[in-house]
Amino acid sequence: MKITFFLSIVLACWLPLYGQSSGSELVERADKFQRQGNYEEAIALYSQALSANPGLVDAYVGRARAREMIRDHAGAVTDYSIYLELHPDNFDILLARANARYRLGHFLQALADYKRLLTLPPGETNVVMFQRSASPKGTRQITTAQSDLRPSLYNYIGLTSYKLEDYTQALAWLDSAILLQPREADYYVNRGMVYEKTSIEKAIADYEHALKINPGHTQALSNLGVLRARSGQGTDYFDKAIESDESMLQPYLERAYHRMQGGFFKGALEDYNSALAIEKSDPEIWLNRGFVKERLNDPKGEYAD
Figure 1 (cartoon, helix red, strand yellow):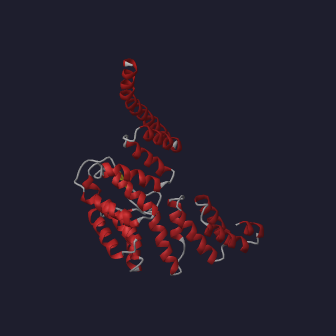
Figure 2: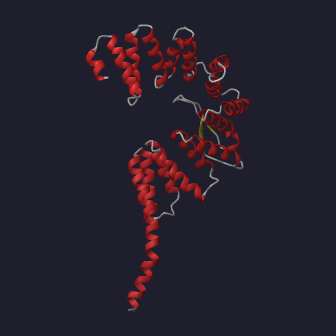
Figure 3: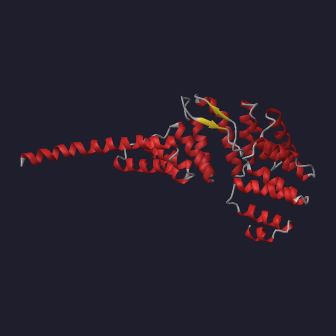
């Protein structure tokens, strides 16, 4: 009887420690998978670790980051939110959640997170701030002091306001970003996008200013090309944008459209082929390539597209 009672006490003390140990080991393995780029395996191991020990809160962050890599931004937001319930003032994680919400199109929630970041006291952070723009090769800054991140946050808030169609607020925030960092081309491009809703002349001026800072800025070249093409000018800007960044979708689509309008169907076909190599899930691209194949007397290809 005494032996049974003693074993019960030992088991009661040992099992929670075993769960904590096994959970920590699972997190270490998950971290390794994440570094190797095996995100599905990492997510599975983080989930197992949290089942073994829900107190391993860093596992929520690891799983969130792995989920973002497979574009499960909704799952990432959930994990970041659980972590923030316990650590509401963690700058890095709050920024990560804001970005994930932005990617989901949850702009009001993203805006609230970005604005809250401005209220947090200055401190140290290991965050890598990407200047948000439409280009996949946007500028990035690596800083350690949160106070140095304010221009980037103003930029984020400005673009989020733009998505919410609050153009007055968008311009005010982007003006503030430019005031603090007048040599950042992305900010002028983003403000130009807002100005397209109110003043085409000011939009063109911002895109041209961005190109003075960075002559190869893909988004500035592409956006300026669209505005110039409306007035009947050539597609040189699209050519330069594609030369600057072959991974960006929009210049191919814009140039293809203008080539098709001008009767240069073979060139339009080449551009739609390049566009589909980047993005296969947009039905409009397949449809437009079908129209081009119709003009090129390719009925089988037209039907397939």
